[in-house]
Each structure stands twice: as structure tokens, then as C-alpha cells.
Length: 92
Image (cartoon, one colour):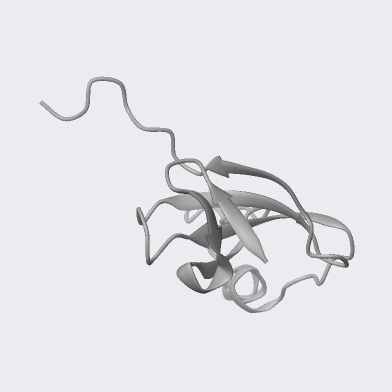
């Protein structure tokens, strides 16, 4: 499998690290104080068949965090985007 990094182009899978499900939402710390809500968030994961959004970290390249939409049954990648868009103008 190859992932098309927006900065580096098409790169082999061994340059990346899977960083988790990009569709889950972190519980609100104040509203969801119940430990079971946090246990479910951390440990319970669906295993979807078909298109799924995942975080991938380009550890051996530009080190960007990417959102990859991949078909989990065929491993075909539909789209790749930066998880965080760079700020305009950079740091001052």
C-alpha cells in the first residue's frame, strides 16, 4: 500500500504509523466525567467494512498528520488530506 502525502508525494506504507480512527470524538471533560464514557472512548473501537477515515503519521518523511479515507476491505485509498492545515504566514 502507498499513501500520497500532500507534501512528499506517493510513499510506501513503512514510512507511516497508523494513529487511530479519525471519526471518533473525544468526550467533553466537564460533561462526560463518568469513567465508563472514557473507558469506552479509549478501548472500544468499531471494525468497519468499507470506507473509513483514519489518522496516519508520516514518521519517516515530513512528519505530517494525515487523514486517509481508505476502503478497509480492499485497502484502496480514496483521499488523503492534512489533519491540520498550516497557518498562513507562519509563526511571528
